[in-house]
Image (cartoon, rainbow, N blue to C red):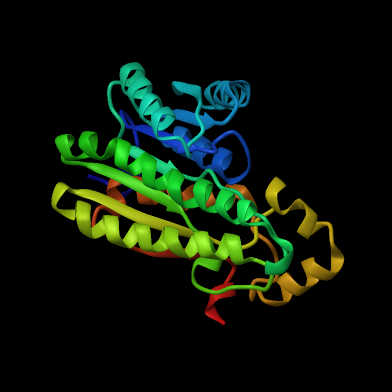
Length: 256
């Protein structure tokens, strides 16, 4: 088989949480461009359906939108059952839904801290748990968790987010060991600063933007589309011998 054919995702079905905007949307579009059908998940049905319609029109692939609060076990189980009923299978899970709250620890509430953990850690855990029987029965699957450069380094005023993303990397490593006998790979993407809605306030602050640029050897922030090649690779047969990895896509930030 020619090497480029190993990257094709035809007849694969992907779920992308938080796929209605930002990095999630870019990854959902890339998966569809590579041939996958995509279930786009958002808290709001209208947002998910709008994103799915746009990607479907652009790529010609079967994309559908679903509403789900990934922190709620019953909602997650219902989502997985509905996607399986609609598509018949799930081959790829991209746990992208995330939340960030910034501030000095004494200025943050316990509720804020818990909310970030629930979305960023409990959500991926619940999604993986719900799909475990399906992946094991089929003896195949690709799980791609969204960590962060702050999974391995950190910054001040980021205790909720850094704590959660460190946990996501460890969740990835543990499930990679747990699911390896079932031919299910589990990997973690570690993005640095990207131009997304979540980071807009940082990008619009010249002092903060300049401070972050100074830490990035390539001298710029990432564009969401630059995540597409990596997520397609990890979802494809080309990455069949990669599991438990945390792969930085950060312009060299974590090299320091």
